[in-house]
Picture 1 (cartoon, one colour):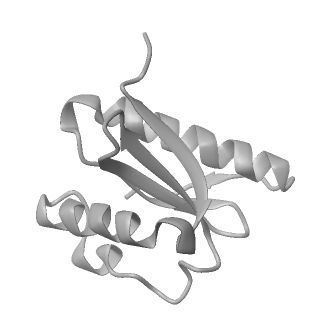
Picture 2 (tube, helix red, strand yellow):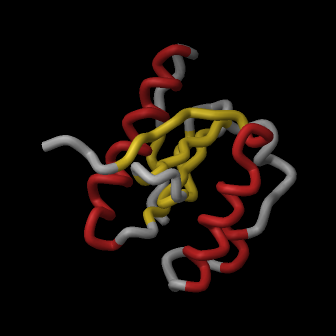
Length: 108
């Protein structure tokens, strides 16, 4: 089955408004804590995964630290949550593999 969304691995500055929009919405939906929704000083150092619906709406995000820790994983479409989170994780795992680091999953 083909996904109804695309996932992109990007630096913070390439998608900051969309990434922040997802985090705020996730916090308001109770999917992530308010502290995790805020931009921190590390976001610019980390690589981010961004999921977009076919019409370009931001629907999910995650990030990976330079040492391979994947965190702040969130998907706004609850009916596709597992597929979106899996795709976000997969693209960050691929990025980690390119850097030759072992990804570490952090549960939210």
